[in-house]
Every structure is written in C-alpha cells, then in structure tokens.
Image (cartoon, rainbow, N blue to C red; front, side):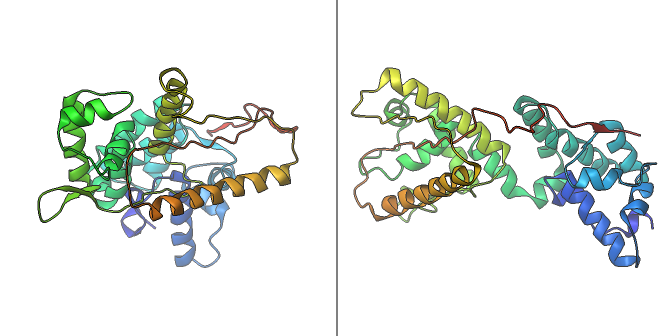
Amino acid sequence: MGRRSLKTRAFDFLDYRAYLRAVYHEYKGREQGFTYREFSTLCGFSSSGAVKLVIDNKRRLSLSAAQRITKMLRLPGEESEFFINLVRFNDARDDEERNIAFTKLKATMAFRQIQPQAITQFEYYRKWYYVAIREMVALDDFEEKPSWVAKRLSPSITPAQARGAIKKLEKMGFLRRDSEGNLRQNEPIISTEPEIQSLAVKNFHREMMQRAAESMENQSAEERDIRCVTVAISEAQAERIKQMNTQYMKDILDVVAEDDKIEAVYQLNLHWFRLTRKADDNADDTVDTEE
C-alpha cells in the first residue's frame, strides 16, 4: 500500500506517536489481520515490536529512524520534513530545543492552515504581558494608551511593547472592538486543560514563576500572598491533593465571573511537584530506537 493511498496526514498532529498510531489503524482498517509486526517491517525495522514500543512511549525515535519511516511511508517532501521536526519537538531534551523545533513546525504552510489554533495559543502565551494586557482591558479605568498600559504593568514594559501587544491580541482574536471602538475581551475567561502539555503554556508558567519571585522584592506583603508547604505523603493522597488544586482553580474562576468591579489584575500560581523520585524511577531509561 503506497503513501498516496494514506489518508492520515502528519500535519494533523502535534504528537508523532499519535500520528504513527493513526497510520497503523488506517492500515489495519484496510487489511484484515494487519499487525504491529507488519507495521514495524513496513517502517523499516527488523525488530517486530519496535514501532509498538515507540507508539506506547516506551522508546524514543531517533532522527535516522524517523527519516527511514518517511521514506518507507513515501511522505512528500514538506510532510517528511514536518514529521522529522515533530520528532524533534516531542523528544527534545529541553524547552529551548522544543521552542526551536516548534518554530520550524510553524513555518510549514499546511500546518498553519490545519492547526491555526495551536499556533495562536503558542503566540498568546509567548509573552507574559499578552495575557496581562488582555485582562487589563476589563479594568474600570482602562486607557488604551501604550504609555498608560506600559506604566501600569508590574513590572513595567515599554510603550512600543504595549502597542505591539494590543495589535497582536486583536489580530489573534483575543480582543475585539465594540460598536464605539473600545477594546473588549472576546471571552471573559480563558483556561487550559489541567494536563495540557503545550510548550506555550510551559513557557508562560516559567515566566510567571519568575514574576512571582520578583514580587517578593518589589511588592508589599499586602499586595501578595506567597506560601509553601513541604510534606511526606502517600501516592493516593498526593493525587487527591492534585484534584483539589484543580477544583480550587475552578472555584477561583467562579469568583472572578461574579465580579462586577474590576480594579486590578492578579496572577495565581499553584505548584504541586515532587521533591523525591519514585523508588523504581530511573533518571534516564529511554533508548533511541535505531536499527
């Protein structure tokens, strides 16, 4: 079965494992009894379980193996390059590599057409003050003056940055103008799924944690509330607390939705993370799948 007969396209995915799984199921739907062993052979592996281990996230896919798959599946040039960059994106060792890979994904015309929402989200969370300015528009005393916006933010930004941010937020659809030409939020609340693994959101969280650290130096105790607690706990109770954090965030948004007097923009960060590894956790137990 040649590549031209495949309906599954890499451009529809942000996870190369999900793409390979979809390709496998397309073949399986067309050929009764099609197995992962046959799929591994089709992808150019001598090991019968190689692709299954990759799809199940038990092995990483080396770039040489990714290139071989694109040839075996006969992916056209742009799609072939996209798949390889998708592997770089998913398996990057750190967020710097991941950001570089996503920039290459964004450069692909088909991806921009098929997944504009992913790119919009990335751009929205790329600068911490984009999110802050979107919220500032709801302030009762908001003034659409770059100098006013820049000075009102903490920490402050330049008027040029404020002007560019407003234009960007309008273009992306996060801000709109009412019948009188005044800026308004398109939606009152924007949130992401609790388990979202978006690089954009990780970048945003990292910036906001930096803002939180700075607030301990440049804001009074009355303006901030920063706490922490370190506990030894069971896995079951740890998961319970994670769910409580999720509910707490929802409760916060309910309180915000009830407000009719908007005077300030605040940021709430919740951090719940391990300080110890699991007993059977290996620091580096992944092996590139290369045959």
